[in-house]
Length: 142
Image 1 (cartoon, rainbow, N blue to C red):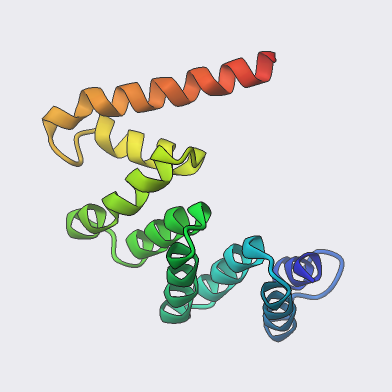
Image 2 (cartoon, rainbow, N blue to C red):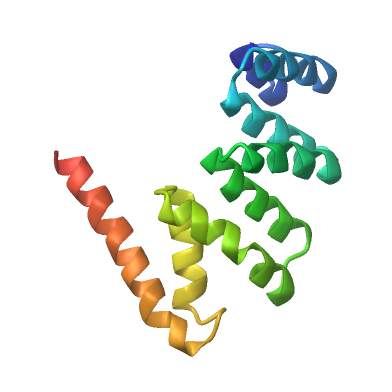
């Protein structure tokens, strides 16, 4: 169901169809696919349904689905970029990064490194990015 939803979402092999994509994502989620939640949230955000997107991801956060923390932070910041939103999503990114989410490590590391949370946080950002880079490098050699 999730794959069918993605095809209708992206228009890969079939014409893009928002309604069909929604239907298949809902079926996949009903079948227990947490990853379908992310795809569905991205579809909703793409079509400007941010409130529903956030509610869906909040359910994932409530179930401690780590990718939901990252995507909720991403969409909240995308919807309202700036310092206030960045500070509000920081705990979501920190939790996801601590649990090993690579996207959260990169975004949080970048923001820390360029001083978005103050000059004292720059070394922490460098360590976070360096650690993520070294982990990726060792995985590619493994």
